[in-house]
Structures are given as structure tokens and as C-alpha cells.
Image (tube, rainbow, N blue to C red; front, top):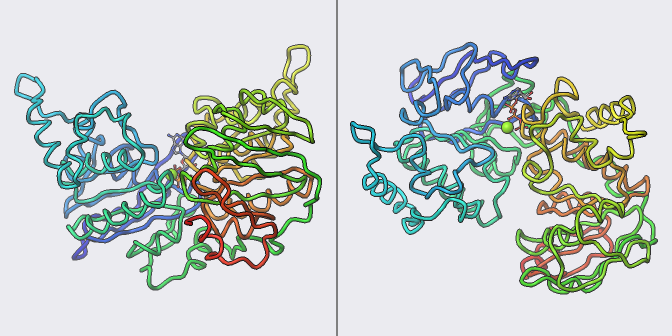
Length: 498
Ligand SMILES: Nc1ncnc2c1ncn2[C@@H]1O[C@H](COP(=O)(O)OP(=O)(O)OP(=O)(O)O)[C@@H](O)[C@H]1O
Ligand SMILES: [Mg+2]
């Protein structure tokens, strides 16, 4: 093995029923480097790091770790050898304490098999103290916010002297502040000589923290480069196999009209929504920009009937309506693609087909029987449209890659033909190729006369896609940009920060 290399994976293959997830790929990790792994949804990134972390067994290939060939039978063996992983979906046990979670599966025991609780808590305390969170170790994991939950996953690795930690899209659910803290933490880990594998769709982040980047496409190795030798455009074209114009040629919609189809007045909800009023026109794409916690998601969740409002009125096509639950909202022609699509947007144990047609299955049903052909046509159309990678529409959603699960949630609401569609962070966790397709789709929908509300924290996307922008801060609309023409990022951010 080359000097300075801590882990060398070569010719790794992995097959799932019907898919070659990885086809003889390589991956080299140097001691103390941050090595980014990128590729489109379904490229095989999560599969590779799960193989390295002992969660999946490989079908073929070699992994050399610290100069010896390893074949971990499970994740516990990998953790004990110093390889930890922070998964895409954090998996702490809610009703167990932080300390117990840190030692999950590996409680210290006496030779008779009794748990050494004192030792467990002492060691948890020591490791937690290095991050100044020793006061949290007795709390139930469910009491923690996302940032802390992620930190606990990291401690799960560090407590066994991790030499490698693999992160799978760690910032997908983090606020800006938490992301900053995570990057500081990664820098500290790197400083301590720990090697990091970093999977993300956010190229900005990769250019900020990675030393090298490896690209996979469709289960195959494309290349490894030093970050300073490549540009973002180069990485994107390696990922998608062609040049990509992310925002299309015409970045505004043609469909925008002045006809108000939806309006809210004086929405209030204790501690989160502070007198919000706005209108939405037919064919318009309205952007809701702001920091995490500024009230954008809260406002739209209340409008959609998920959370109750204390005060306020909602009008559809000029008529006052009452929305007490999401069912009411759907009946009125409103659709919502939630931010946390995997938790709220899809049923993991159902097929792609059932997920997509769920909101409107009644419309496809006559005399108690579903019109199967029609259902299939619709499902296939949207699978094709969003390029959902699955063998067939009967695949269970939990066998798809994370990004493809998200696309299923989006397909479901597109197919339901709602007139007003709310997208909460539509491109989170989605690869660049699919991002371009989603932007194009939003434009087409608005050209067809649909009205769209897009909640987003990504300013470039708001500036390139929306007709009009509302900036949220502290639960209220801090500013409205009536026309999205020649705005600069600074102009918009200034209102979001106050
Ligand atoms: N447990 C599984 N059963 C069946 N197929 C699977 C399983 N896990 C992954 N796959 C398939 O393997 C391929 C690679 O998936 P993987 O999760 O590694 O992609 P990824 O690069 O992490 O994508 P994303 O960016 O969407 O998270 C996909 O086609 C996926 O559907
Ligand atoms: Mg993944």
C-alpha cells in the first residue's frame, strides 16, 4: 500500500436483486484527509461506505485497512477496528439515554455478561466532555435536536478510537449554524489525524472542506482528483456525463398572470408565525426564502392543515376556506412536498406505484376497482420524467437510494395534479442532474397554470427560479421582492438576517 494511505478499496462489487449497485470500483483514503465521494442519486455512494463500515458484505474486491486485508462481518467489527459511519438517516434509539446510544451494541460487560453501567457512563462522560456535552449523556436520545443527534453518531465512532469516519449527506437536515459547527468539528477530527469520507450533493461544501474528490456514476468509478485541480463544472460533468445548464436558458416563467388564486391574511401561531399575509397568482412561482426557523415551513405547514393556526384567514379563488387537516387541503387542490420527505412524504414499505398514486387513488377507482392501466401509465410517466432509478414500479421504496426516495415523494404530488403545490426544499438531497429537471418541471407546471410556492434556503435557486420572493425573518415577512430582476445575493440575504 502507498505511504500515507490508510484505506484502499479495489475492485469492489455489490449486487442487489436486479441492480449492480457497484461494479469493480476503487476508493483510496489517505491518513488525515477529507475525501469527498459524489455522484448522481443511485450512483452507489451509500453502498460503498456501508461496505467499508461493515453494514453490507461485498460480493467481490479487496479492502486493505492499515496494511492488512479486512473483511468485516458486521458494523460492530468495523467500529471496534476504528471505522465509524454517520448514516444518511440517523438511527439512535429514542427511549435510551445518550450514553447507552453511544455504546449501542457494544456495552461493556462483566465476564458473566452483566452490563458495567458505571464504566459505560464514565466512558460516555469522558468522550462527551471533549465536546462539552457531558451534561447530555443521561438524556433520552429523543430529546435531542438534529445537530446533537448527529454528534452522538460521531461519538459512537470516537469512543472506539475511530481512525476513519464516513459521513453520508450529513448536512441535509442541518441549519446553517449547525453546518458551520459540523465543519469545525470535521476540521478538528482531521487535525487529530482522523480520515474522513464525505458524501454530499452540495458541491459548495465539498469545495469548502475536501482535499480530494472521487466521482462514481451508475455504480462505476469515474475518477479521483485533488480539489484544487478541478472546478465545480468539471465535477458536475463527471457526475452526469455531459455539460449541464442547471437553470436552463430562460430562467423565468411565461405562465405568470395577475389572477390571484390563493391568499392568506393575518396568519398567526404562537411563537412561530407572526402576522403573515400574502397572495399567490395563477402560473406564478413564489419563493419563500429565509434562514431555518424563520417561519417559512411553519407557515406552510399551518396552511396545509398540519399544525393549527391561532388566527388568520385563507382564500382560494376569492372564497374563504377552512383547512383543518391535510385532507381538507388536498380536497381544495393544494399539494405539499415536505422537506423531510423520507419521514413524511413516502411509505417506505410500499411500492413506488402505490406511493405515487396514493393521494388520488380514489379518482382512478370505478366500482371499487382501480383502473390499473391508467395508474401504471401515470406512474411510469413520472418515473421517467424524474428519472427515478428503480427496476420497476413495483419496487419497494426502501430499496431505492435516498435521493430516489425523495423523487418518489415529489412524483406523488406532481401526479396528483394539485393546482397549488408547495415545495419545501425541493432539491435537498437530490443530485444536480435531477435538480435541473426539477427546475424545468417547476417552470412547465407554472406554464400550464399551476401556482407554486417554493420554500428554499438555497439563494441561487430562489434567484434563478422564482418570479417573486418573500423573505422571512422571525415568523414574519421581512421583505417582498415583487419582481425578481437583477437582484444580488447580498440584497436578499440582508433582509433574511436583519
Ligand atoms: N438494500 C437494497 N436493496 C436493493 N437495492 C438497493 C439497496 N440499497 C441500495 N440499492 C440500490 O443500489 C443502487 C445504489 O444505491 P445507493 O444507495 O448506494 O446510491 P447513492 O449513490 O447513495 O444515492 P443517493 O444520492 O440517492 O443517496 C441503487 O440503484 C439502489 O436502488
Ligand atoms: Mg445515498
